[in-house]
Length: 278
Ligand code: C2E
Ligand code: CA
Ligand code: CA
Ligand code: CA
Image (cartoon, rainbow, N blue to C red; front, side):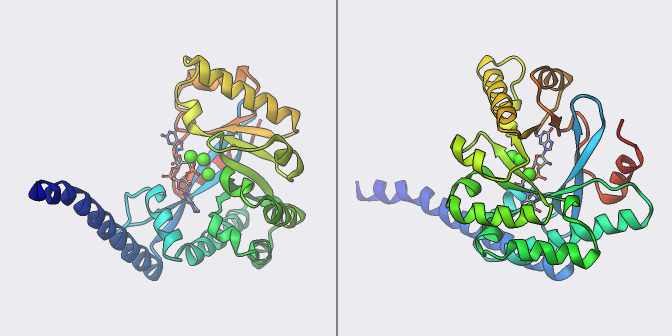
């Protein structure tokens, strides 16, 4: 019985140490990529569902040729958050998005606002509005060229200090979106009292549209609620014409997903800037 017990524990222990090793490997790769400067931003367009064209770009982190190449930030961002590297990484994303917008404007292209993802860890420091203001000032861009996507759980946790920070950001002219909306609990009254612009409907609700009646009902409810609150809606992960058409029919405002375009590098994204919105 003793032997069996020990054996029963081994796979668990092995699983733990493999996870720890993998985490350490990712942490080393993060440091290496930061040192080598091999990170880059890719951009994915968000467009109106009524055919008016592309409205903004979401910036998504990639490692160009480094040890993290081919890995989704969904895997390495949580590690960066754990080991404190999200601070320099998040600073870099903010600065790089501003630098890129400046570069596009300088090359004579009509600009689109860029949405960046903000980690709860960056938010908790309390000086994010100051950092954003400095990053914008450094390239001489107004806040209206920047949008910040933050997760629903971040916004709803510690609502008073979050509200204060959001008002500071809003005062800079920065647009505010709740990412992955629907995956966490939001109170209606909180949504109502925060200076938000948009809700991004999580991909998990979009995936089975339009066939899945429960998801269709949920998405319709989110769109209706957002409209009542004066917020726009963006559906993420739109992969088919059927999803696109359904979302347009229920009054969702904008969409993002492979059906329009996958994320691409800055050079490739310039073609979306050249194409004037209808
Ligand atoms: P997210 O903010 O929800 O970003 C959308 C993710 O969905 C991106 O994955 C994008 O490539 C992917 N996507 C877009 N359209 C489709 C589609 O039609 N179908 C499917 N299946 N996927 C689609 P990505 O780039 O791997 O990023 C994953 C997550 O990592 C992001 O999810 C975001 O939470 C985080 N992330 C990415 N860049 C940053 C960053 O600069 N800072 C922070 N803090 N987090 C980031
Ligand atoms: Ca996002
Ligand atoms: Ca999202
Ligand atoms: Ca998501």
